[in-house]
Amino acid sequence: MALPPGASPGPDTKNHTLTVGDVTITALTDGSVTFDPRALFPETPLEAWAPYYDRFPEYFSGDHFRNNLGSFLFSSGGKNVLADTGFGPHGEMLGDPAPGELIRDMHRKGLDPADVDTVFLTHLHGDHVGWNMREDADASQPTFPNARYRVHEHDWTHFSSEEMLDGPRGEAMHRSVIPVEKLGLLDLMDGTTQLAQGIEAYHTPGHTPGHMSLLISSQNQRALLIGDIAGSPMQVTETEWLYTPDWDAEMGREARRQIIERALEEDATVIGSHLSYPGWGRIITWEGRRYWKALGE
Ligand SMILES: [Zn+2]
Image 1 (cartoon, rainbow, N blue to C red):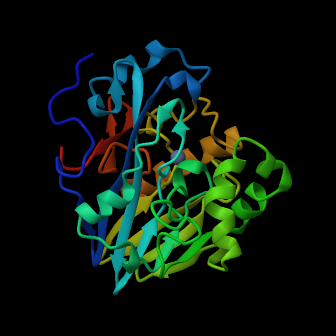
Image 2 (image 1 turned 135 degrees about the horizontal axis):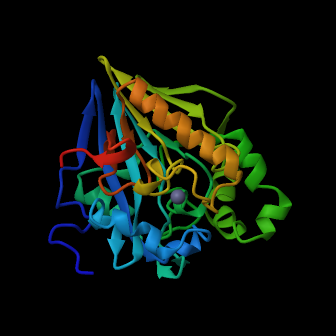
């Protein structure tokens, strides 16, 4: 299937900032990776995705997913909060080489890693922590030299266990999370935490034990950063399909249902790590079903 012109995720093809009251949000990308959906949805046949090809043309390359690796910089009250640090410049993700674009993308958008005050990690999967530490120069140094790094304590406990460190998730932990903790830069959260004016992290377990989302509220406007609660735009509609990256499948489904309800009730913009670049949209109802619809389209 040919992709329509302009469908590529990229910094220059679309507007990459959004304001929610007094909060400015900049969409960042570490690039995108292409893979067979059955790698993450083993119970869903390829044809089941076909009805979404027209709705999300930028998300498909033929019958494969083309998944954005999104990060977001939230600026509020003189503070900069970076949500997630991408897959990073090493190895491959689901068979696709790491694009490793995040720091270049920040520079392209006039942002300096030294200006980040807080690195908020929605969870500790490898595609959300990849640029925590520098790899371009001195790998013993954090990429964001003036930042504290924050994550829910349940994710730290879960992913830093000996069993996890020895397993397939261990490599990203050893490379990108353990060094941050060793340097004394990691602050654990045990529940709802204000990160900056109008920016609050809260616990949304299911995808991982300590997965957190952000509620942005300012001047009567709201947005929700949902991390990987929906790991693709289609999951806003197909909330029940088994998604193997979820740590607890049923809690993952419940978290999806709840955050979609919340977005509708509170008229909130929905921002997600793997929603199509730049990653923000609204929940709409169409012929009795709910869909994520990118803003500005
Ligand atoms: Zn992810």
